[in-house]
Image 1 (cartoon, rainbow, N blue to C red):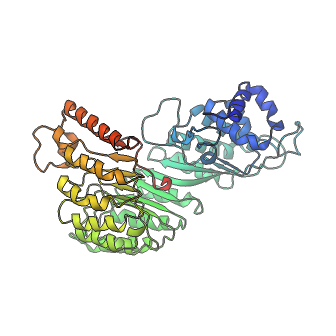
Image 2 (spheres, rainbow, N blue to C red; image 1 turned 180 degrees about the vertical axis):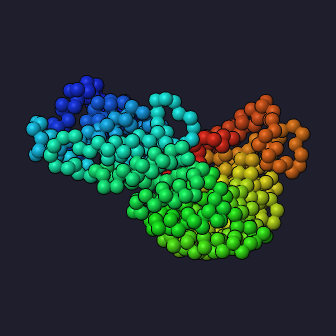
Length: 493
């Protein structure tokens, strides 16, 4: 439902030229709703003028495009419209090229007080978008082009220099876009348009390029560094990590393919690992650490003991963890603070099961998100863990995809999880009952690649749905979709 104020605002914006003329006469309290409606309805002329004459120091997408009292639609959960994003950028450019009031001969207009344009938080789920929407890279490119053009073109009208505007963005960069983004960051230094990166995601970027980019970022703005598909190894990481450690406000560090296998030690490897640990000890605000596909067997205690503060999110997918790693984590100060835990790809079916249960018990009071994809958990292990799992009273998400569970095991999980009032999503595997001729125990690769009997699975889905209805839990999503936007980001927990 929309409020009368929302409907009236939408009506006002139907005639864009008239709405632009009326902006100086409207109460500034209406501008946030005007922005949301114009962004939603692609009223690009009005949107550009709203940014051009914005009467507040801050224009924040996260504040303006969320669900509000007048409209329940949360635009941040949708891919942004290309037209609307371009209109915002054009409005910003127009503002920078317009003299401040007092030097203008135009009629009465508002004082330009905009100091920060916060464009962070836009949806980027990795799914191909239609031509009418922008991906994170599209947004990065559009803002970067504006920075470069501003530096090259300078002011176009006489009068006082424009008041600088800080543009906060989430940046995504790869080999193809590196040079372009580096130029944009260099151009923003000393420019009226100052580019500030909140979250940096670098994919398949050479080590020297990663370092060069980090050196250009504002140490006061960055909260996350995410290095993907770089296969740095310890040697490469020992070069990059001191440049990351200078970001004292960094809250999230996501690294992959960090190899530190104690079973095949080398002098250089040990030196690099010790240096990496020393640099990790410099972070004072780190709350999330992701070390996916890093060989950390028997070394988790060394890694986590260096950190100054307890973590709230820890991702250790495919890290070949040993029982002693899980035992240490269960006893560490981190366990009692964990909101998100990802142990995917670690075999929890044998000697790791008891330490895992101890870890689950230690984190039960805080855990919101638990990912256990491909952990070789069969019915026996699941049923033994259920009494502890159901103590996680605040759990919202449980990921069990790729585990050899039967329909009987899933039904038991559904019945027992009724006590978890905050649970909203369970990503479960296709039951082993739905496969033909599975080897036992089935490797995860077989479960992921083998064909299932669609008729049997349809009956399974129907039965699960009936059980949810009977238990008053129809609002809980039980799904096999691992590619949907279901796993929560740490900062959204």
